[in-house]
Amino acid sequence: MSNPEVKRVLVSVTDKTGVADFARALVDEFGAEIISTGGTARALKEAGVPVTPIDDVTQFPEMMDGRVKTLHPRVHGGLLAKRGNPDHMAQAAEHGIQMIDMVVVNLYAFEKTVASGADFDTCIENIDIGGPSMLRSAAKNFESVTVVTDPASYDAILDEMRANGGATTRETRARLALAVYQTTAAYDAAISAWMAGQLDGDAAEKFPARKSVRLTKAQDLRYGENPHQTAAFYRRDDYAGAEHSLAHAHQHQGKEMSYNNYLDVDAAWSAVREYENPACVIVKHLTPCGVCENDDLVEAYQRAHACDPVSAYGGVMAFNRPVSDDVVTAIFENKQFVECIIAPEFSQAALDMYAAKKNARLLSTGGVNPAGGEVEYRAVEGGVLCQDADAVHEDPAEFTVPTKRKPTEAEMDELMFAWKACKSVKSNAILIAKDHASVGAGGGQPNRVNSARIAVEQAGEKAQGAVAASDAFFPFRDGFDTLAQAGVTAVIQPGGSIRDEEVIAAADEQGVAMVFTGHRHFRH
Image 1 (spheres, one colour):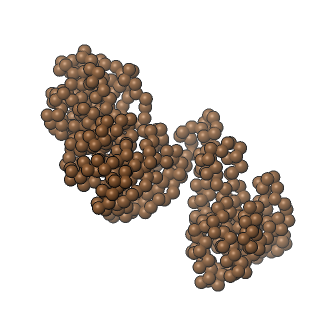
Image 2 (tube, helix red, strand yellow):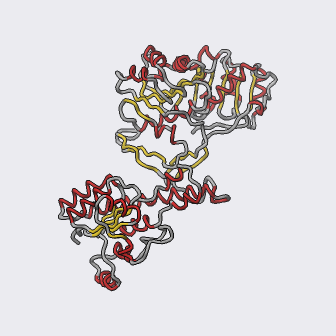
Image 3 (cartoon, helix red, strand yellow):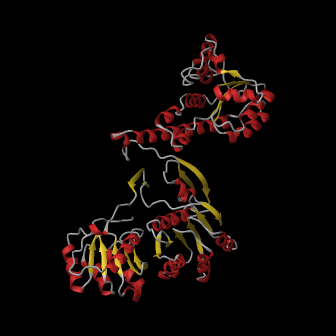
């Protein structure tokens, strides 16, 4: 079948960007008839574009406040009829149905309406019915009908028509049809997600029987984890904390973010958000190599860096406070190469200082979302795991202390820092802390005693008088003994092992205070 010329066009858009110029070109250059509805028809008439009202086509008035206007056989017959099928064309002629060669439609701005805080009834009225119906009809019959949803494509479509005698190519029509189904799928997912949130009972469950995740591509990446893997970065359209999220952060300078950059920055940003006081987290290969909380952000950085300067080189950093030129000066004094820094803001002086280091990526979020509160997704072969983020209210007053020696007030304060910091280390996680800074960490090991050994080795003499956190219980006393023998004076852990009594006895033998939280913080 040859490419059909575009002679009859139905235009009904919410986003009127460029539509008058597009319609005028269709009329002036190709002699097309423009059919239109409601506000779009008015806008085109005001722009001097000749318009046939939809009522003239359907011989039926728009009614019910515009709810019913395009749901008519003379619209959908003109879209769905197979041009090469004699029976279709005979039936169309019998019922006075003329063919429609192009549909230019974009949908009611439902998501913007919801985001504006509109009431329930207003949101319902902004669920588009006719628009998706026309789009789907046109897309199904893309062999004959060109369907346009994005104003950004107007110029390219006109150029193609100019090059093809007023017709579009099959390749373009098929690509535009695919865009329709992607658009309507995302639109329906947005409505279903909103509706679920409005209802009580099963429909409002966080993990319903069917769940859609809506994504919009932000950029193609140079490659994935390794150069032979292709990759792209998508933003979640349904993320409630988008405003201050990594996905919506502003990049001030530096090369494009890579796949691994995003993973590392996310790990650092998630970790630093745990703290109410100024804090710095340095991450390398998804593992925190330095964490510090301090009233002085410069001090927080310096002590986070001091935990493991070797690993910190070439890592990423996160701050939960605006980064000033004083912080940048400290980074430069350490001669630390940094892949990325993420923070709520950067002072202009800080940006100016980093301008010469063109490869360093600086990202600002404009603020800090509270830790947790969202659903996390992780892919496995053929499926997706969903869970609540690891955020739980933990009141030290509700913790238990099973050992004879109780932690001092200062130790308890230090243990709470260590407990938060330990959450961001891969399981089995052991973290040693002193003066609200990590001094040693071991994680990602098949057994907990090896994690303890790594943490102690890294901490060295700093383990003397320090505290430690374990993300899960000690299955045997050996991991605890490793910490106690290195000089750790207090340990925080969930408890719950069948050998808890053995570990408690070990703590009592060595005069170490132990706190049970009742909550585990695995990070696989």
